[in-house]
Image 1: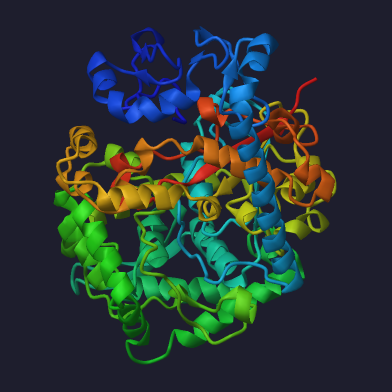
Image 2: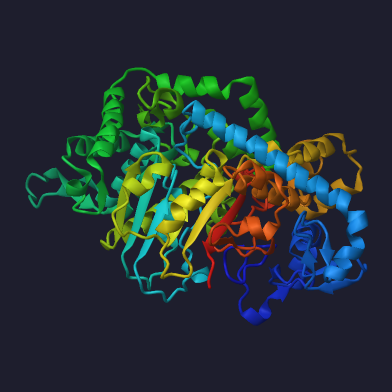
Length: 619
């Protein structure tokens, strides 16, 4: 939970601190009522166990608060050294197995990263114009500096992808905050960064609209057409469609053309935006190449983009994935979700006018194979949906609609409107960096320090110690809330955690009591009787495996003797003056340590997403 006093069951904010009901065992989960607490009992078991204050000593078998975990494996707990010595003869076999597994995993990671380095394999094999995890407020003043904070803020977003986290952060920024905020946005992919700059430029620039104006000539009744300038908040609905929809209206098409021409003809981004946005000239010219290509493609005849999308969405794997998705989301949303798969339009049917133009900004060329210089084609994968990049729970709290297309288009437009209003104050600045995430220091203005450093899931591709070592010097030491966030999406591929859940889901009998408990929890028969692992992953405790992975990841690039010798969790997790917030006890303040899955099935998570926040160790 990333809101103060938020109910773990219904997401409501407890009306007063005294009205919240805490879980007595873990002291972390809170509820707005006894009903919510009772309803969440089954789902909360896993989180309660990992965060529990009271545990059983493996030496004396007594349950106590304040026990210390085995430094080697973290799978046994003790009152003191005497109890640890007493239990060692029976515990040592398991403990040594865990340590050996960590060492082996570290070797595998080392080999993977060495191979990537030897093959000069940077970036990912596709272009992500849309997010693959829900948008997060990366500032979240209420849980960090406090809503009355009155100093400038600076955010570094490495591997930023699309700007969903940025606009969400601006949208949620307290009205009382009147200081300057600077976002430094980095990506290695020119197509991705070109699109992010374009979206933010729309919000900065606003648009001219043609409106019929009655001329005061009663004899002839003349009507003329006049152009009016409207701010970025008025362009928000157009930006939503340009961001996500396959086809555009003539008005939105002309808007894209106009803004691309301005960007291409500009001598610099800083001059064009009067200092709101700036970028190294060499990096800027690479984006200009992308924008020029889009302008060239804008006049291409035929429905070639629509045809390319249809090919992707009619493949066997795509059809299988769509069928599973439609089975397990709430029934009321199935018609609108099916409409999205068929048409690729984030607009409810009743709002669709003549959409005669294809959205050529959904094309591009990947970085990994062609360095963004290959032929442009439609790039969006069938598994990446607009509903993935925005938290379903947040969206439905904002506005409850049967149609996902209406609910999401209006929510995103709302976020963009509020972001544009923040931009209009002149207190928001952007600095864009087109480079490898490990080369950022070369381009950051001298003396610039950051209150937030987000790194997407770069840790899936770059050794974790290298990331922490590179970004720690960039943290603002004067702000105790300064943090580096590392996300992990692929860690489970190196463990047996997913296979374990998959096998259980596939072979579990329909009448199994576990399925009945899932049915009681979700009230969804499609989820409870599913054979897909996603339905059951949040009821399994994978914290031990993730910690083993994290320990192994922190040993990458270490000398061989360091990787193989016994090291305690504390000596690994305290990395060069950085310490990890206790994600097991939900102490993250920026990104969720993990996402609850079944209550947000529309967002299409797999349940293994993890985030770790690193802060400067206070002396």
